[in-house]
Image 1 (cartoon, one colour):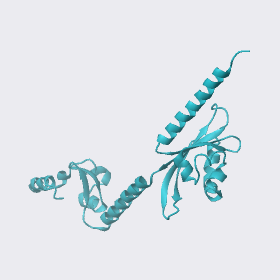
Image 2 (cartoon, rainbow, N blue to C red):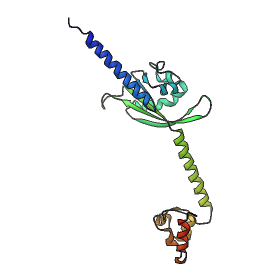
Image 3 (tube, rainbow, N blue to C red):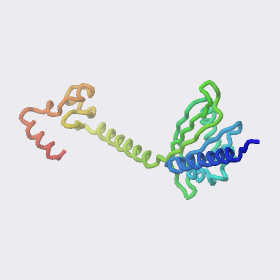
Image 4 (cartoon, rainbow, N blue to C red):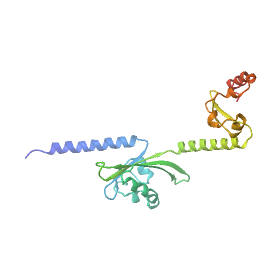
Length: 212
């Protein structure tokens, strides 16, 4: 009989190496990663960040279905997105994740269907979760600041103009009334164009001195 022990050993070593490399890549990624597959969508793999996020370890989460891994309340929120992913769609959405010590984080979830071919239904799905709380808060602060500025500029009877390198980029309704032009007609035109020639040099020096 041929000796298959060496071939078997090489195969086992190869599988171990493949799993080690997969684990190394997954743990190096800043995202939370997991794979659920099979008829019941049981967890086959998760990095430490995802397992901890779901309240498990990388060993205890393996073999669990999504309801078992996430709990019934979280699963109820996630289930519609999972069902859409299992129809072959890559799904991306935001949700708030409550913290045990109070407060919450804003996370972006991406579900990627695993299909053997494009013509066959998914046999599983890859989950990636990224914490975007700081980015979301910064964007919200900008939106709120812009909204405050908009309300202020619309409430005042003074003409307000925003420019970039001397070219108009935005303004309020009072500016339209003062100049007689719609805002779309004003954008891109020099601000100094709307000043009397006698005042242009002083206005330009004022702007260049950063005194606006």
